[in-house]
Length: 331
Image (cartoon, rainbow, N blue to C red; front, side):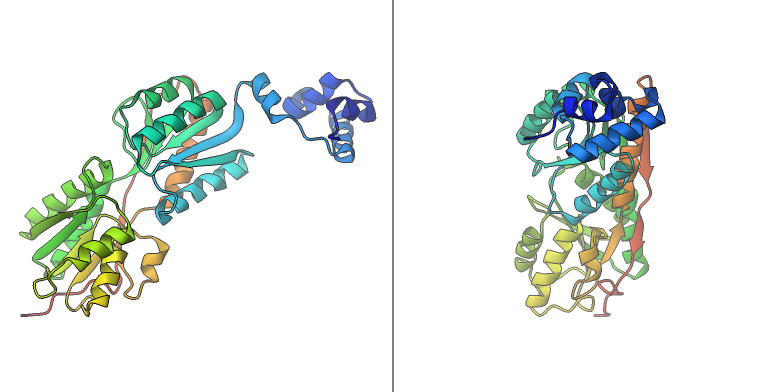
């Protein structure tokens, strides 16, 4: 049978209340007593009841991370940044992937409110639904990889600038005809990247053809590239994330298109797989792990200061230039 707190108290020669203080408020207990209680815990194999502790202290020592796609390496790296800081603070991390589904997200958030974690980091599929507002009323919340202009703190990347530096790079190489492969504008990053790319292309007198996909995945990139006329390709294809770009690369290479001789390809996020692709991918780099770490640091600061004012932290992107881009061949 599992050891009880009463057994720990008897072995340590202290009261049950003292054992509870050692577990929850050790600053109230003398060091020699703490050592005796911890030795008794080790001897008995006692495991504190996390649910009961949560009822006493009012929250669970966990951080909930709600992201749109755990299979996307960008969000996996972002979560690793969260976990690094959480480990330093003795916090557990629970991850929920919404697949970009606002209804699923709302269900997750209502459950999270009931669980009362330390706080929530979320890349919301929908910033307007009631469940997100309810969450913000009850728990510390920070938007991650989403910029907020309102009452919620956020940590994000300047995606308008990111798209612009990709176009600047292509302009320097002499490109004048670009295809932009992007998801729905209901995804804030897609809308911001479209704005940045469109403005920069106009500045450089580059013609842009926009092609929409439903999901930012390798499969969607392959499907789109399979539909292109290889005898009438643009000089460059810019994709709204690296998964799309890798799919485009795969399909074009299968069709005998040479990258970058026939067409250059640019991605977004600079995931590890991009650098290891058959043709290493030029990509707009966004500091994913740093994004997650900064978001958790911000959330914990707000937890400790209930009277805080919302803060918006925005990282600057950079460009990782690799073999998938080159100057277009002269006709």
